[in-house]
Length: 133
Image (tube, one colour):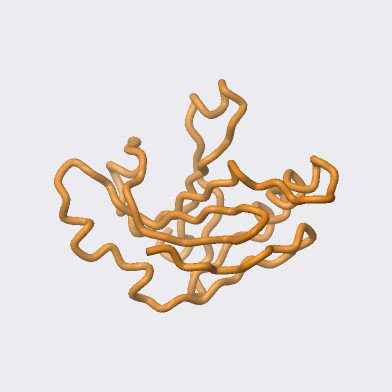
């Protein structure tokens, strides 16, 4: 189930602190599915910032660490209407500098794959909780 963290995020936003019911962050029975890695996902668009829990793309980091410490963040559909194209890039840069907070826990950019670099598409990005480093 998707949870809307913020509707119509402003292009000049400077803080990303969200509070959600704890049950929206728990993997529950999903974590027991063999061969799949489940975790938190946040999707940024011009109309909403949403959170859900679902299947994450498998990689060495998630296979060797606790997936609950991570959030996969996607900006693939982020484009602000009536603003220059660079507005989305500047938004992402401010977010990466400020960090993302879920229920008081800070997450910072942690990883992107080589294939994302080759295709020049750094989405989705892996963010890790600083609370457990």
